[in-house]
Each structure stands twice: as structure tokens, then as C-alpha cells.
Length: 371
Image (cartoon, rainbow, N blue to C red; front, side):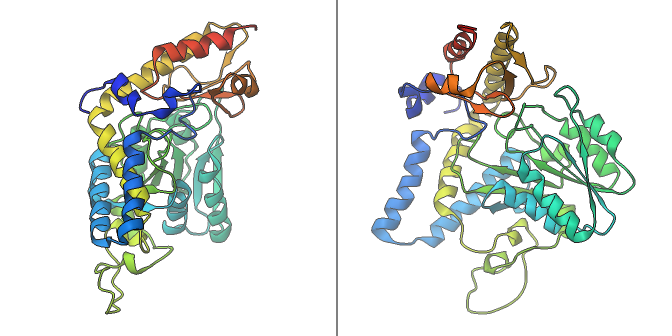
């Protein structure tokens, strides 16, 4: 699929053939038939034939290349982990923090980007500084203005999971590079909604899962590690797959890989990687159109909500992502109508590119009804 054909894609989305209107992709995306079929084919082969590790590891490397292509990164800088929280823990445990160092996060982060930093700060006698949103908005400049001479790490979500606020990570990354500050990005709420080019962003670590905007399986994430971070990070865990010659099982030779794969300890979640591989192949050719359409549907939602008197939109108008937060309705109201949204200090609605304008209008109409 090299061109955006909404009707064709929807044919493979079984959820569109139910009575449910699904607008909760920031929580988890439904799976396309082609992804389900690929994952099922793995389990069917294993059920009937047993193992095929050689082919499975080839698929790992192919998927690593696909992610590198999407990020404009060398595949050797990509590692697979089990979720986004593991990637943040890798950053917290691996980066060379010491007593007195300062770690900057924001006040509306999902907990996966909070607890690892609190934990390592207590262990290293470092300090976590929190930068606060103002009127539902936070800019790169707000974070830059909070930096002190002790700041060693800045760890932020590219797109805020609560209200969809999107940070200018290029500006923030450039500042970090110029001032020798490690820059960590939780990209899970943005990757698949906009381009993230690590040749421009200068992040040291980028982490994302596959099960939201990339429409892939859960229980799998990737982490990009910059060349600088690869040189300077400690490996918080180690295993046979961390080694340079990882398939030489007969000879013990402690020689960790110089690539990001040194953070991989053993056999992979091969079935999930096959599903991620298919999702990436399916979406990469249409990514630009996909980004534009997500933005279009988000603008349609926000514009409609702003016109409803008893609704208050809590997503700042100058930043657009796939997420919109508002108050004025209870989640149970949408549950009763079989409309899937989320509650995060208000109603969080997050359409994907395959949603139609008619579905968005239906959502807006029921939101306004009987107010």
C-alpha cells in the first residue's frame, strides 16, 4: 500500500465492522488483519514444525533496519526491549550519573518516565527537577530555562500522554548537544504521528513501543542509542545475546557488542517482532499521508469541541498531535454509546488515520447532545 487508501485499509480493521467507534489509539491500537495473520503464522509454524531460530533472528535484523530507516538511524544503534518502561530504566541505569547531578522531567509525564529517575536519583544521590506546564502548555524554552549547571539528563515525552502537548525536540536536542546534557525521549505517543529524525533531533536515547500509533503488538519496544551514549553507557544487564559473537555458544568469550544490541540479553519476543515487522512495512510507505490525516482529524475534533459551550478543551491550540483532552462529559457517557475514549483528568480522544470524518462528526454530535 504505497498510497493512502482509507477504505482499503479499513477492510482489514475488524473493529470498524463492529458497533464500537474506536477513538482510543493513545492507549492501544486495534490490530490490522495482516499483522494478526503474521503473528498467527509464527505460532502455527511453531505448533507444527517447532523452532526456526535462524529465520527468526534474520527477521529481528530486518525489523531493526526498518526502525533505523524510519528514524534515519544506523540499525546498529537500535535495540529491542520488552516495553517503553524498560527503555527508560536502561537510560536511568546506564547513563553515567553521579552524586549532585540533576535530572529534569516534566509534571505531566506518564509514570514510566518518572519512577526510574526517582529510583536512580535516590541510588546516586542525584536530584530530580520537575518543570510544570502552565495553562496546559509546556515549551522547549520552559525546559531550557529550568536548566542549571548541575543538569546532566533531560528526559521528556515527545508528545504528552495526557493532553497531547508536543515538544520541539529538535530545539531541545540542539541545546542539550551544545551543553553536554544527555537527552532522553519517550516517543511512544508521537512515533507514527509525525517524523522523528535523529539526525536532526540529537537525542541520546529514544524509546517507543509499537502498540499505539504504530499499530503493532504489545510486549515489545525499541530503543535508539546515540554513538556518544553507546560509548559512555554502562550495561545494567548482560546475556549471551549481548556478545559480539552471540551465536558461538560453545566458547565463553566475554566480548560485549559495541552496537546497541549489547542491551539485548537473549532470545527475543519473536512473534511480536514479526507483527511489528508487518506493521512497519505496512505504514512506512504511507507515513507522510498518515501524519497529515491524523493532524487533520485532530483539528476537526478540537474545532468541533471548541464550539460546544459546556466543553473545555485542555489541549493547547499551538501544538497538534493525535491526542485531545477536554472536560464536560463523563467517560461512562461514551461507554454507554460504545465509543472508546480514555479518562486522563478529562476525556482523552485519539483518532488514527483510518478513522473517517463521519466518525469524528458522530463523536462530536453525541458529545454536544443533551447538554
